[in-house]
Structure formats: structure tokens, C-alpha cells
Image (cartoon, rainbow, N blue to C red; front, side):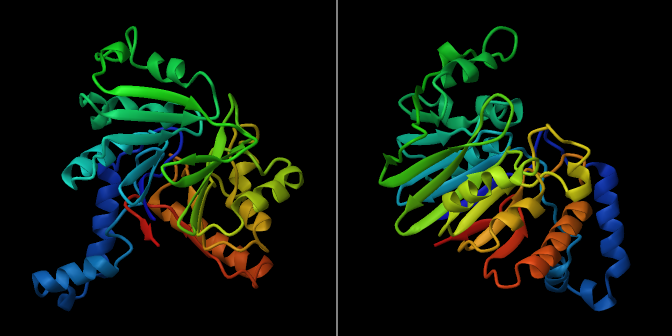
Length: 312
């Protein structure tokens, strides 16, 4: 099983600005020693180890889960455009692709019209969600005055199917389960099991408002997963200024999973207002909190960044 993150921001895409780029360049230059710039090889080594040489990324939610010759895509935020190009470049465009939607707010579907495979004749796109009206919701942004290419003119074959809440579904040899989340207009989390490994994806859910009501449910859903990607848009204080927005704090998930066997917990759906430095501070604070309240926990904790990968 292979996982790669293509979009990790929430709400709206946030391209790196000139001001942010200058700030990174200023930090790189200020910390560089003469030997760091002595040769092209030295420069590359310096860039590899400096936290100022990369960004968490600005694309909205999109996660690739691949196994054998199968490609699953979780959400179609702006990150899906680059995923489509990569699948073509890497020769991994199978006849049939599977897209799984947590929900249909703009930041999770706005990349769909820019996903290369939907424009390829003969390609089959299977769309899965917990809702029965996925086709209507997806087609809205490609009809009327919203997009130049209309849904009914797409040359690919798009098939929308509803997943049951109460049972697992077998898809291409994988077992897929969904979990109703706490978010406006319905949202669903996913767990994908294949070949003895599992990925759980729980973004766009407000567990921090009444944590005791759902803690056990979420812990059972992710138990044994190698990777758990969670909505952690806010820090502790920030969350209390955004109650009822449908998002959570990473500290609540740490509480939930303190005694749960997982491999890694990933902070996802970053606030579009958060800089790379702020996200890094949130991750550092979260790791300190984990050490305090769950010193026995063996799982790792990280902040999601574009092009981050896992392989089992």
C-alpha cells in the first residue's frame, strides 16, 4: 500500500506568496555558512536539512492511496490536478479509477474539473460517497455559468455509487468502511484496509465540541491502522474562536487515541491563514502534549505536507 498527499489545506487554496518566499530566502541566507555554499553538492545538502527550504503546501484536500495496480483518491481538492498529471507521467492511469468523497464543500471538489482522467475517452471513474446525490453535487460546478466544459460533455464514463454506513464494502480487493462525521451538510470518514495494512481519513469533523460523545467511536474506527489522517485545522485557543465551523483541534485527537494502537497520526486540513512556521509550531506543541498525556503511546505524530509519502 502506498499513500501520497497531494493537498493538505482546508477551506481555500493558499499559494506561496512573494512575501513568504522572501522570508524563507532571508532565513536560508542568514543561517548559511560559507561551506554550505561552497559547491552545488553542498548547496543541495544544505537545502535538504534546512526547514526553510520547503513548504507544507497550499493545495486543498487530496490523498492518493494505491495498491497493486489500483488507484484510490480521497477527495478532489485542488491537489488532484497534479495527481492526474503524475499518474499520466508515471504510466499509472488504469482503465478504472476510484474517487472517494468525504463531502461536497467547494474545497473538496473544486479540483475535479481539472482532473485529467475525466477528459479521456474510455476511462471509467467510479465516484463513491456516503450520499446518494453525488452526481448532482459534482455536476453543479460544471454546469450553467460555473465551468466551460459541461458535465454532460465529459468523454469519460463516471459512475456514482453510495456506500452503506452500516457495513464494509469490498472494492478492488480492499475493504472500505465509512464513518459519519460532525460537519455541516454531511461528511464521512474513510478506512481502507488492504493486504494487512490500513489508512484512516477523518477530515472535516468537529470532535472538539463534545469529545466524550464520539471518542470511543473514533478510537474503534482507527484501531490498528498504520496511518490516521485527521482534521486538525485549529490549535487549542483558535478552536474556541471557531466553534460550530465543523473543524477540530489536534489535541482532542491525541486524547482520543492515547491508548489506541496506530502507526502515525497526521495533522491535516491546515488553516489557510497558517504559515509554515505556525504549522510547525502547532506540530511541536502537539508532540509535547502527546509526551505529557500519552507517554506510553508508540505512535508517531506529524503535520501533513504535500508530497509526503508512506509505503508498506
